[in-house]
Every structure is written in C-alpha cells, then in structure tokens.
Length: 82
Image (cartoon, rainbow, N blue to C red; front, side):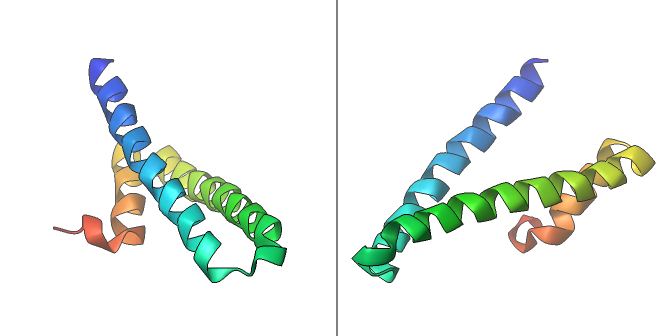
C-alpha cells in the first residue's frame, strides 16, 4: 500500500506544474476577452483526456492485468520509453 501511496504522490507532484504551466500559457496565447473560454477548454480537455485514458487503460488492464496499464502509458507517452 505504501508503494501505491508514493506513486500517487509523484503523480500529484507532476500534475500541479502541468496545470500551472498550462494556465500560464493560456494567459499569453488567448486574448483577454476570451480568457474564461480558454481556461474552460483546458479543463474540458483534461476531463476528456482523463476519461479516454481511463477507458483505454481499463480495457487493457482487464485483459492483461497491471502490465496492460503500463503498456498503454508506455505507448501513449513517448518520453517514458527509455
């Protein structure tokens, strides 16, 4: 259980800077009159991406166990390939 807690801590530590950088980028790329719409799009795309990733990984995990989940992450995130 401690291993899973540490993994989730690492994931959370990585998510915060991603959100901050995404919002900061939005401030510079979107005109001020459309800022609310831009930030809403970021939130929507994060929700859609998380849902799609969960659905895809879930299918692989059901068929292959935890290796299937790691396989999905390995193929969808190129910088994890070392």
